[in-house]
Image (cartoon, rainbow, N blue to C red):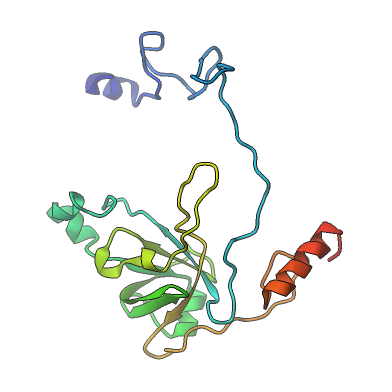
Length: 212
């Protein structure tokens, strides 16, 4: 690959080699051999499993962590670039309008987040339609608001990738310091809020037996 070729073609899809000097339309194309015994891509199939940590009365929201385009990992390099630091100098929490209303906050306010493993203070609020009610998002790059202190220690048994998502949390604002109260709702099946582990087990049995 060269920059000139990338500009000319409008981008190049890997793999790009002597056989395919302009790249390939797909990663795994017909005739492409891989390093395993079969010489073909190997897919791993697994059974569906419910969230490892469900919401409860104490922690009624689900936290997902992730990246922001301006920063990379722990910002050891991007944090030294002024324009990137000016664009994203600290972590924030994205809330749905419905959850912001429950906490009596608006964009620019600051709140705390807590889980069974810890608490993070002074995180700025962004009210957005990007996240749905009951879910929040926080980027993980910032050690001043180290959101991974809240997350689970679980990991994928196949890839060993850590699961820094789907964590049950609570939010605390100045006007609503006790946090959001969980609203119980009627559900059609087992995929919903359960008060206890015994209820979750019972719901799983009912779903297996085809009951509602």
